[in-house]
Image (cartoon, rainbow, N blue to C red; front, side):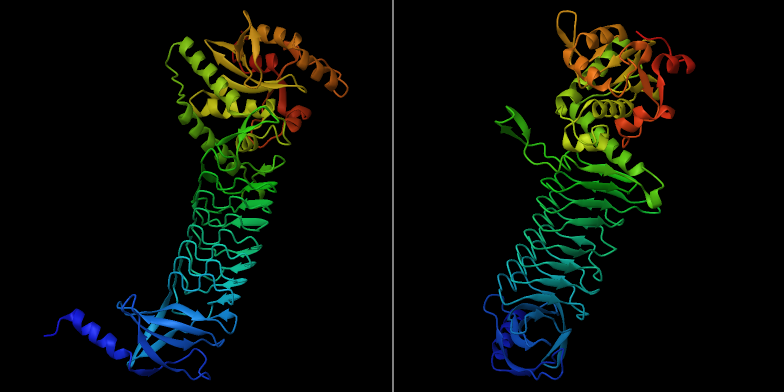
Length: 507
């Protein structure tokens, strides 16, 4: 019996002399072309026409399917027939091969909605081509890495009818003209750099997506709004990986309508640092618009669970990074040291730069910039997550000029200010002090006195004494300082609050 490999080789050689008719997608186009053997792969290849008069080079795989390995574009828009007939046997065209139309400047569009057999588009298949529009249908299930990378004329991609569950790495990276994007409602993941440096201005992440990988939307200069679509059943947690939305200078709105998030600490602002000579310090290499607004409304405005889940996931990772944990059974001295360590880390982690939403923990943690309100809310969330009781840590302030925290240790209440260095005793920097020490510090701090004088125009009552300090009862991460302090229903004087709730004396 002839060796099987020799038999295949004999058949391949014979194919170069055979003329085979192929059924085109448009039956009005007669196609009878010679078949040749591919020297590189030993797969038989032939030429057919699609309905737009493009000539497609087809290879018959040894695994029993046909694939498009290249072509000559005459009709501008690429379509692919469902099958070809070869030696009396029909082969479904299921693949567009790797690099098949790479750098083809004649190709202006890809429309595969009528291709019921084509399920796979290979690596770099259309990279750098002149394609302007892409339409995929329900037969398409997998588009490999970098398939449309650097198609700088591509402006519209409609995947809504496709069966793509994952957009692989770099698929549309560098498509700088891409502004019109429609995603499938069964999508579960977006790969690394998938839409990096594209021109999209807004994106709604479907509720089915469970992962957005590294730098998926990095460098999208026009991206102004991102909405994480809510899920009625709340069963899908969304994993946000490092730098997935960094270097987006136009991003002014992020809406966390999903209920569950697992976010890295550097989703919006990179942890890499570069030296800024104008500021005389190291700053994040990539960030987003400092005027960004981060909100979360849930389904039909019913819940802010999403934005709180995002904040908590970031804070949990920060606590692990800083190796901070709170042992409720530890000696009071050790617990106080843990609290001091937490305040010090938060102070070092964020720049003291006021931003539009400096009272929003989600925003300040994303931008690494904060004023007092953001420091106070970040400390509050971290303190609870590391194990402190809700009756052991509060958010408060002087009512109109400055915000800080109160913490309870050894039965007494102390002041914690992550955003201000209190010089107590021998000029030692402290973030945790007694009430008397803090009042003295405030009264002798020129910057605070100036800000107090400025605010007295609008708030004539002197709130900087202990008797007038307040507790903010409403501690949601997305609340602004202004709404906290100007609404009498959500604030209370600290001494009254501690007494009414039987929480113990001040230190």
